[in-house]
Image (cartoon, rainbow, N blue to C red; front, side, top):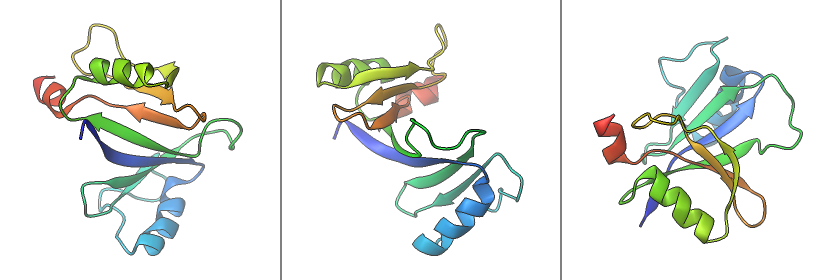
Amino acid sequence: MSAFVQNIAIDCADPYQLAQFWSQVVDRPISDEDSPGDPEASISLGNGVDLVFLQVPEAKAVKNRLHVCLRPQDRTREEEVRRLLDLGATMVADHREPGATCMGWAVLADPAGNEFCVLCSPAERAAG
């Protein structure tokens, strides 16, 4: 497999409140590090994938409220972005920091317009 799902991020107004709901849905606890009022909250699904809830100021308009974040296994983030673009994805937003070993991410859209992120590989994270 060339990439695996690292986390599923959900934009919302109140991360802790939405995490409480999902905690019940998936029967998994909210991270002990999270508290009401925090700008993010997370739930480990226990299989290496986390649900991450991120506070945003705007209501749902165009951007997905739920998206998958991919972490390439045997390629760099840049190689994986190029591979996915070659497969038919389009670049939506580039949050990679030029010159940094492994900072930021790239937001792509699949051919149907569903957004997802490409993160740094495990090797890049270890090096950076």
